[in-house]
Image 1 (cartoon, one colour):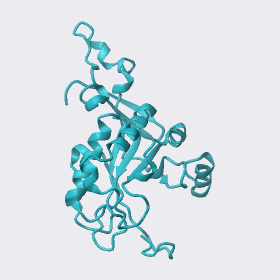
Image 2 (cartoon, rainbow, N blue to C red):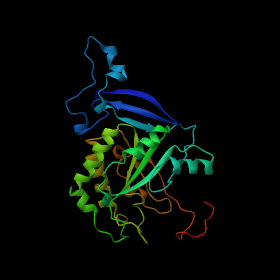
Image 3 (tube, rainbow, N blue to C red):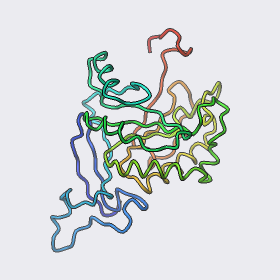
Image 4 (tube, rainbow, N blue to C red):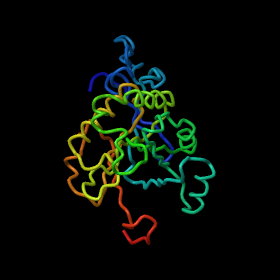
Length: 254
């Protein structure tokens, strides 16, 4: 793993595992900086205050004794939306979900991320390579992502995430394993998907290391292994499941 500083922090209901130094960051995120202490002052290596901000790499780890409450509360995370959910659910919101299409330009949603952080939770951002035009939307094809055609968007997002500095969840191309009756354009091609995911992960991680990466398939579809991007590229796994097969239709028991 290389020289690193590991510190565990309390983050509301979640726990953060901070990895600093060359082991916790990659690429330019820690360029020219090191947390390795001089030999004559070994105790300095375990003091979080000594870690440069750009090299702090907080990751979110789960407490196996806790249940976290997450929800999509609307197109934007606001105090009003969160408050309405918490009143309805009679639970605090730990994870606030938003969707970000590449067509938005991928400017990092700092105010929404801060709103979740202020409440002791974390934002979960699902990056979607499309322009909301349906299953045949080819505006941001996987091959184009692999070829680096949209690195400017990924770098913009990463710079905003790095500057925000607090731990966040990010996924890329969720429900990728739907092969028949697909509804997203990135579904159904495991080879291209894995390459695109790995490129997105590498490009963003070269700049921002405060991201907990989520691999997010569909629970009702098979062939999961073919779409897995590798342990080095996924910190958490999430599975999307639906209680109805018709959008807006009656709900069924899961």
